[in-house]
Length: 125
Image (tube, rainbow, N blue to C red; front, side):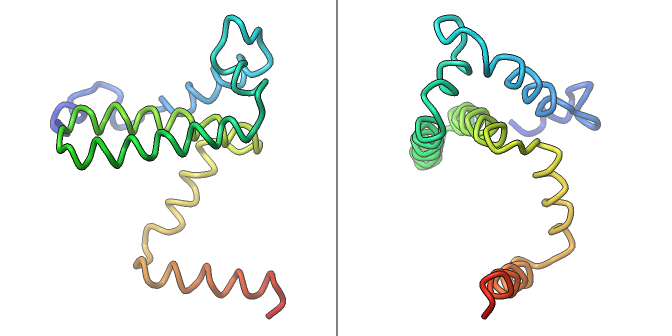
């Protein structure tokens, strides 16, 4: 499955997440009867978070079923709903990608230790 993604002409400079985030921004204040995005924003953050939880569970179930195409479809649903949550907080996909780039050179254990240290500093411990 992953071999096909490398053949996509925009794979090296893919801005799909940015384009999708722009569409979300343009629809969030729209008519809830015509836009799923507007409907979820109308219901509020808790409704979006519930959808993220549901989609995350579906990713787990698809992964356990072992069907790569279902995993891809469910992760796409999860990413979409996560983009809604990011938008609700005024955060963009570029912000998340910047954080991933920041972590890129760290081992998971180093990154976890740094987050723990920063959390303690914020809490004044």
